[in-house]
Length: 444
Image (cartoon, rainbow, N blue to C red):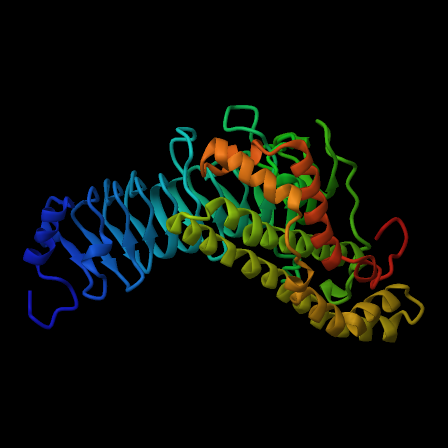
């Protein structure tokens, strides 16, 4: 290899063996010179056709890279015992993998996987995964074959089936990794996050943050081949059948709540229908994301205290929460920008239409609303003492195993924590913010 090559020479790669790194074919492993070799820990296995680049790249002890095909790591951190390429080729760019993460075959960028705490499920993302920017897979959450996520947050144990497109959602619920106890989305489900007009103010909330982080709420189940038409709000305990068409609000139980459509649009979509439900759903979702940011900044940071690797992992995970939040604000703003044309057409053709006042209210209030929503950090306050003490007590019993620490909290700590998180969400999604857009009747 020429001296000016951006990669270490084969003999330099082979020298990793002296530190306990297994490299079967040093000539077939490319490591960029910007990667400090000491960041590849003892016990790592590098298979042929690995390409490892980026000054921030790091591979921790016991990780295995390229087991079943070529693997590219670019500005990526790989946690202890993680497996990259268990089923085929994998490309990772600006990704962080927690301990024990198992990736089959696919690609991910600007995503975080918090890793595995148990044996089930045996994988984190299966064959043909596409994990795009803003995806956050918390502990033992997983997706199966041919899945696509973006701006999606999965709480612990949440499981996505195969052949689905699941973008712009937060999914919570469930109490354990055993069958029948975790929230699940069946194969073939699609979250329709674009309207015919090209709007994306369609983020959906399945479960919530303020209750869901405590890992004590009933699981929810979305049947396979479902059409989930965002924005949707689904309650804990909801069970929907395969092939369902879901919109609006879905309550708990085995039968979806009766669906309703917003007031129809016309003129080929140029004139909008009612916008109140869409607006309120996004404000409520943004409030929940603000609460999650507070949870990461206070509770998770406290659980990880003293462990620099876990602290860094949670910090990376937290970075994706405001990324999701600002995306929701941005998409809501894009909808608002389109309303001027709708208002003009209504005023020209239907001057008495009640949609005019509703849409104009949103347009006029939007600068103030946008500033308020983007200032979500101002709503976060320090966690209550009962939760702080409860976390310390539970961590003393369970170490830093996140789900055990959370489920080991005493009831008083959980109650105080819920009130704290609801306060954060409520200071973002205030009654004033929610009432800024009047309804047209029946909550529309």
